[in-house]
Image (cartoon, rainbow, N blue to C red; front, side):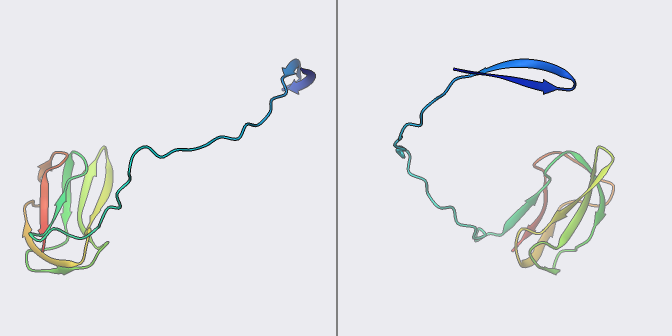
Length: 113
């Protein structure tokens, strides 16, 4: 064991440190991890509200072609505006909300085919 003096914010502290040795360890994987695929479902990708709030803007209409990352809606929650973006490329088949509408976490906003 070694004793050191350490000065913090003008105060002196006495610290004891114990010497330790490293041990070689084996890491075993006990659960198989499967790789997830990111393909959209055949019936389309659902865009859902990530939180409760108010729809301040609807930037797309049914029939519009969108690209991944494109802003679809602006959702106000706790006085902050959150952009809801498209999860994939495709065509908007359904828009389920309108400006000023209140939504809850998980509510369906749109479907992209």
